[in-house]
Image (cartoon, rainbow, N blue to C red; front, side, top):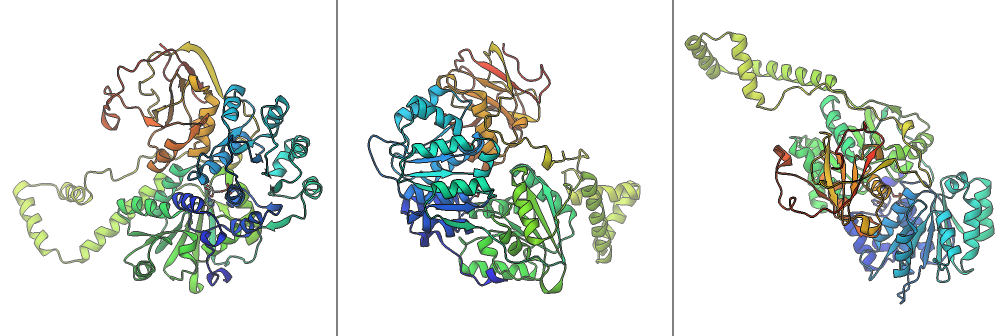
Length: 598
Ligand code: AMP
């Protein structure tokens, strides 16, 4: 395949400044995605661009990085970059990405403005000064009309998901905003599809734009059986992977993730479960990488967790399974990944985890490979238990073939001394071998993810929470819903926080569907929120840094001394002064369930 021989593009070849390179290093990105390596040089040169690319291709960094290079250090700070996005979720996501890539720049601030949020908060943030505004068209127009958003210093404008803005009826607003910006500004237009009206806008407002489309080349081998599992977020993917490892008869498995950091975290998590597993990423020295690959070939390792770059061209016949833990950035990368199995004329299995948001990428892959990828259910507890029983029986058969004279003597003696029933005796030995952990999995089936039932992203999603209006005085208790844990966020009424801001931030960042976000209580200085039990450490760390209304939420888990086990005591929870607050219940919950305000 062609990419097997291609040189890997590097961020350091893209003329980006060291604060930006450092932020990419922090993010664990190994190399630019196709749209990034193709688009960044043109944008750095100041060209207008049209990118036909979908979410998941890394398009945000493709425009954010070059635009950040063009920022001028001015005081007072004026908005210099304006991004228009169709939905509040996307606006928050893009603004957070700017914040992430600009984290080592002095005094850098990016702000998301969208309908449904208090004007007060946006006005004060605008007054303080920000370099980047990411907004939904309606609210951006309002601010321009009120005079609270001055576009005089805007040097770059991005229209993100232009076809979505068109579908949602924003296109006139978008054109109006375009006309308010200085004629000299650089424009980047992104759209997954290119309907006529988007082409017309490009022709009218962009000056000789460079067009970049992420396209297609090869196909997958017919001997590779391709399936996908809908998996909504990291926790679900991890569960799906663990179940697959138990039921899929695999020789060697290659698991693809997006970042170097993830290769290590996931490999560690699997090694903890007893799998012979290693990470493979560009961070690992060439000599060690070769050793790891040899270990995979010889069977000393069965699972590799890799990034695209590190696994490029990998040719190991034993690889019977490729698992796309994270969906690839483009359909072509999918083909390269999947091509790591079914080598030397063998058959292979490719399993892809797909978040409902990534459905379009799934469609693009199917289109490119001209093959349907069949949905599969997450392996059931029953199937897993069957496998566990079969494997255990195989171990017994194996042990019966080995020499066990010493044990035979001991067992015969034991049996004569105690007169124990041979079945009971054998069962006791089986328990000894297996240990104290339960042998079978509880047969509660995992909830099926349905791709079609995910709520469509809308511009101003109405809050799904009802305000009870009664002040809560004892918020720092644990949730009554056993499947949830209560968390504290260091943002409250004083910071203008509304439940929608909390839901938006958490749903976007942690990939938790909003219906899994439980009760929210907002107090003067802080808030509490109930989230599904057992949040992965990676997501917890990520949420620490997420900002709500421009303030980091500093998430912390609330544990009280009244509870046992993992939820044991932690200091600092009693004696906090709680002023009146408000409690909100999620629509999904039974009324009356959850904590009621005192
Ligand atoms: P986007 O298409 O901009 O929504 O990006 C999709 C996801 O890819 C985001 O979670 C980004 O953080 C991540 N991402 C973007 N560029 C890279 C890269 N070069 N390497 C690894 N991850 C990336």
